[in-house]
Length: 281
Image 1 (spheres, helix red, strand yellow):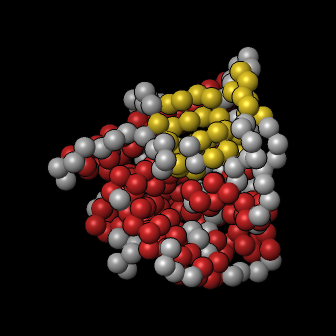
Image 2: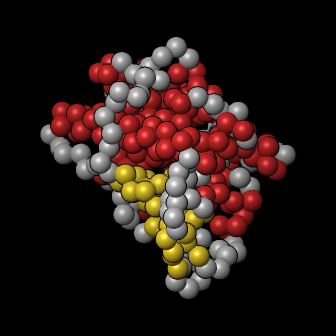
């Protein structure tokens, strides 16, 4: 991926020097989610975050944090990808007669306190609609490669673009509509809507790649394959097979490997927002 000459975003909050202290998370569904490895689905439902809130008020202390050269390059990369999503979605919203509200991206280490609750790095990257911010511990990129076999800078860019896709859904009101619809459904029905929401974020990630490449020529040979490999690696069926030895389709919340690959491919091939209607399909 050609990124080093790209614009850097001014919407990065670096909290890697802030250490959040306090007791452990409460038990219940949040603990089960992490135990099953669902934290690596690249999208955390805000209701799950709320259930993971710590008893009492978390404390934070500032440390004399000095990033390594590798960590600084990763932060630089994230800033460029975020800026590129800003350029892409600002243009798309402008064409529709709307203004794109750019999200902030928070870099943290270990644990972080968000408007959606206290979150651990073990949960992976997530988007919090309450404060309109994307949160990521950069160690996730190492885990993405070592644990899931998904290497490459465009695989990492896919992760960021997916979370920004949730921000787009928040701005469009899609996320709110889904949460309201889920209230009147059983668990299986609510999970199905969650899958459709996550697959649309995958499609939006692909759509960003399409527009960014046409406008700024960012893709190199093998980049799309890197993203498709990442999408396949974090499908519900594959992760459930790895963590519990069997697959339970009705418990899917983010989609199967095949579905995630399909919708990312749809977005990067089409580049059309209308073709990311996972709900209509």
